[in-house]
Image 1 (tube, one colour):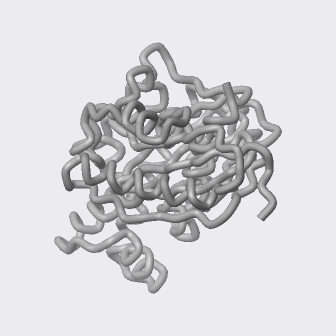
Image 2 (cartoon, one colour):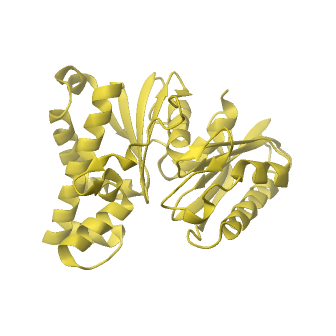
Length: 296
């Protein structure tokens, strides 16, 4: 294999799976990305073992290339300066874990750690649905809900690094993530039917016309339109990019969500704003993490 001069390892740590791949400065994937199921409720050391194993496999694949570092996108909130995951619903055993220091000392390579939504949308700004656009609001719909603001290829972090942490905004009897996420759609269906099934199964039922599944997706859609409108009315971006595993079900909710959302925002914004699915699709997480290594 002839490798480009510089490549980065990108790692996406989610509540359900950890995925890693090699990416060059042009956004080309090198070799074969790999993923493993996150042992989310096992001791933190076990999750770190999984992570280091995956990074080792990437280093083996990169044999012969110049590795400039390891970018890690993790479900948050994080303290980026200290390189730790703070309190996190989806990875409770990694609370306050010195992730940055551990990975840097294990591999002797530069490491950048960021919120998974920030990383994903930086990747979209460089190589995906946000290319050639200056202001991006990104939403990630995975196990949980994330958001990011990228302006001129720079992540807007806010005074404490918590810009985009919309998941805990109050909504109905809880917070918005309880309604708008993979976990959220399962919760909504369970409330209606008293049955706990996966988001994929609920999507399958909805496509077959199941009334309870359609009811759950309708409530999800309403909540997503609200969440987007609050954020867009403040940020006024050129584009909203939505990624994450829940987008596999976008055929069920996308059109009705877009028309609802446009009713809740400023008319001038509604006339010009673009809504796009993530261009990097299922690779957006690790590609965005790798993108951290290619920008200041």
